[in-house]
Length: 108
Image (cartoon, rainbow, N blue to C red; front, side, top):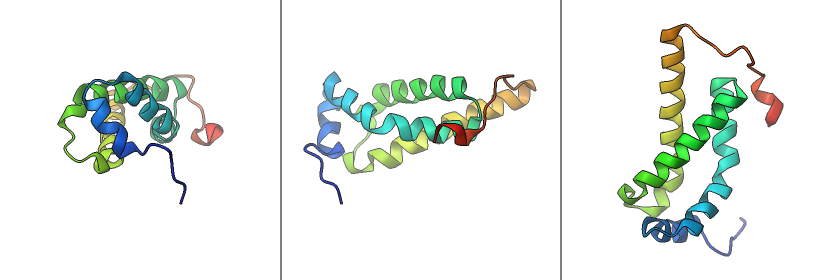
């Protein structure tokens, strides 16, 4: 097990109080995992990048609602999952896919 100087659970209360640096540190720890998951689901790099930003923006806006800082990973992953499937469902209804789709495994 790798121990970090500051754990996510320690950063959450700080970010909930408006500490932008604490939230930026959380983003840096989680952005690659969020992006890779979204890329696998969406099969499009640009959509995955856009949606990653949306996921973190919504996380920042709703972080105060998170009661247990230890649940942050599950909470964040649930948010990214919901966003990905909302976008996929929306694209399916419109019958559109971006022409520049790339294989998901290219960036892993």
